[in-house]
Length: 68
Image (cartoon, rainbow, N blue to C red):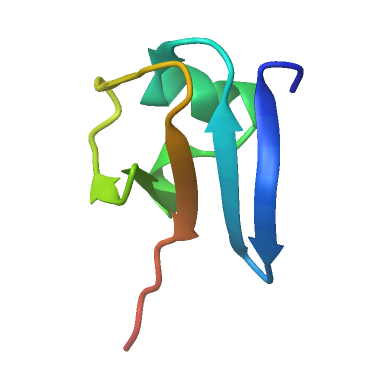
């Protein structure tokens, strides 16, 4: 995780600053997270797996919650 700087961590909510550009999918692979279990916000906006994350962007990883 040399290309990420963790900014905050509150329970299951984590926020990072990206040091090099990449796709959302690449970021999740680097963090060893399964894409179907998380929603990703880039600079406060929800993005898809194909979106590029630019250098310096703030990333928030949210767990998806299911109810019944």
